[in-house]
Length: 257
Ligand code: NDP
Image (cartoon, rainbow, N blue to C red; front, top):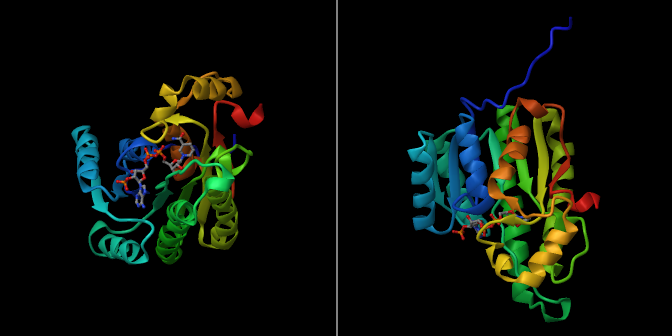
C-alpha cells in the first residue's frame, strides 16, 4: 500500500480575501471558505451591504472581516493591502470575484460602458492580483481563483466588453499560473454560466430570455450561488495541489452542449 496523502477541504489557519463578497457568488464563496475554517475578508464598495453580509456569516460562528474598497482604483487597492499587512495578516487565498456587466449591442456600446466593464472586471483583477501575488511570492505559497464566465469562451450577443474582459481573465489566469508556479502558487479560473444572484435576478422576470438560457443548459436550470462553493474549495484547498492554469466551467453542461 502506498503512503498516500489524503486531501481535505479543511482551511483552518488560512486567510482568504474575496473581492465583491457582499452578495451573490462572492458572498456564497466567502461563507463557504469561512465554513471550511478560513478567516475571510470580504470587500466591495457598499459598506452597509458588507456589514450585513459579514454579520450573517459571523452568526454562523465563522471568522469574517470586511473592508470597503473599489477594485477599479489603484489607491484603494493599495490601501486595502495596507490594511491586510497591518491588521488582517497574510493572504493565502485570493478570490478575485468583483465584477459587473453592461449588456448592449456592439453598435450601441459607449466608450464609458467599455471602460466601466473593463475597469472592474479586468483592471480590477489585475490590481488586486498583483498585490496578492507580491505577498504570496514572499510566503512561497498561495491560491488565486479568478472568477470569469462562460461568456469568456462562447460567443453570445450583447456582451462586447463583458466577454472581452472575461476572456482576458482566463488568459491572465494562464500567464500568472506560468509565472507563479515556481513559488508554489496556483492560479485557476472558475467560469460560471447563469447563477441566480442580484446580477442575474432580472433574467428570471424575462420569460423569453429565461427559456433560452434553460434550453441551452443540459441540466435545464440556472445555478445557485452556493453551487460555486465546492469548486472554489477545490481550488483553495489541498485537493488541487497539482492543478494550475485551468478554467473550470460551472455551467450545468452548457459549454459541453
Ligand atoms: P453581483 O452583482 O451579485 O455581485 C457583485 C459583487 O461585486 C458585489 O459584492 C459588488 O459590491 C462587487 N463589486 C462590483 N463592482 C465593484 C468594484 N468596482 N469594486 C469592488 N467591488 C465591486 O454579481 P454576481 O455575484 O452575479 O457576480 C460575481 C462574479 O461572477 C462577477 O465577476 C461576475 O461577472 C461573475 N459571473 C456571474 C455570473 C452569474 O450568472 N451571476 C455568471 C458568470 C460570471 P458593490 O456593488 O457594493 O461594490
